[in-house]
Image (tube, rainbow, N blue to C red; front, side):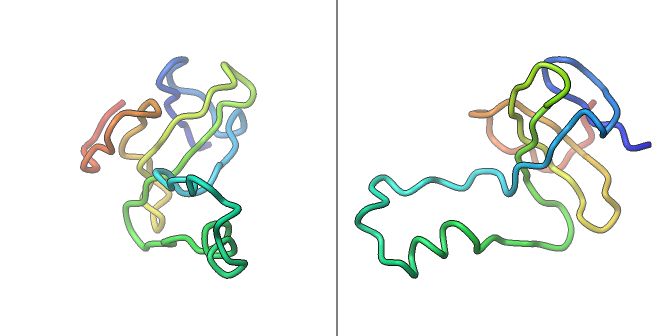
Length: 95
């Protein structure tokens, strides 16, 4: 079983968490000013990188909070988790 470290609750089984998409995606300041194509780009186009990737996760069956994580998309290994508002770590090992 994959274990994920919540920044508030500690290490827990993956079944307690839900993926929330790519991290650090800024919402448009005024969505009403965007064209349909620009809005679709914001909603659906993501990096989908191979390798280390920053993602949002939610500890649904725990504290209920969102947090960010750096996960390797090939190995599915988490290298870091951190609270929203903190800068992305450079992929160093962190528990």
